[in-house]
Length: 82
Image (cartoon, rainbow, N blue to C red):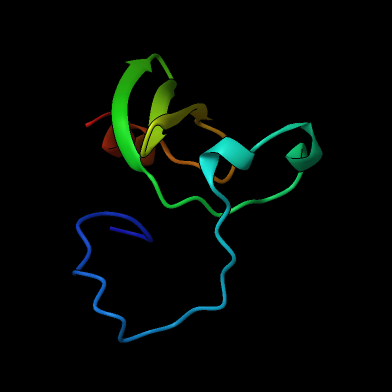
């Protein structure tokens, strides 16, 4: 299934060095950079070759967009929409 799909529970067996950002801290200063968020998917809506996601972290939300391109497959977009 590639690098996505139904994964096992996170039980602290691995400790990757990631610095997570809170959704409410996102802003113009993060434009063009990669950030790590720990959220849950609130809603998703597929439209053609793209999917719109609303990601929620406590009372804060952010909208994300994923579309088919050289690094993102149509199957992954379908997975996100479910």
